[in-house]
Image 1 (cartoon, rainbow, N blue to C red):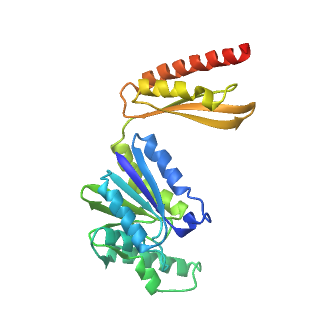
Image 2: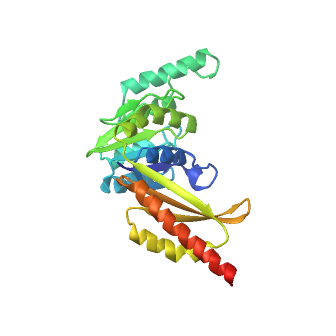
Image 3: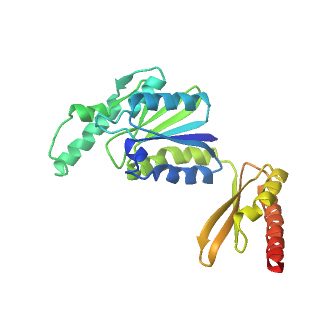
Length: 264
């Protein structure tokens, strides 16, 4: 499947909060052989959310995961933005309302909250885009949302990492496993020559094996500057075999270049 992630929140854009949610999801989506085409972050603005979602839908991915902005405050407007993008309206979902109400009643009885009852702000979380399905939030109050739009599966998940992870595992992960593809990743590390030395040869190998994505990553290691060469592929039948061949070819180049540098 092709997946796109849309992350909502001013706190992400100003650097106050680090977006660990997309990193968490990306690792698991990729693990099951699905390809993330884009990760987009926008602020808590109705038009930004709506326009971003329309653009993603126009690209026709198989799945869209929207994260954040489902809470009770005035700037939590993800679902309103989704409704606007889908040319529909928000409507009170009784199932979501009852679930939220039970959560707050339990929290009040346990002494966690001092305010009882369904306020306007709490009720706000029960207004979902028309035709959508509420998703249970086992770690919080704001329900998630599932929508199917023109064969595109859309999930709206909470932005609180603990809540997002719980809902992702329960609602999204089973689909990823059911429709799983093939993902392959191999890598090796070398020292002694720089990334720019190896770059033209890596390009040649990548052109030779277009099914593979070959990337070099410079970094500081235990013994100084290191270069990691990583090779990844999605849904390539003989990916491991091709990767092994490509790695051996690059290793030969590295050994040859090191020998020339020592000789000089």
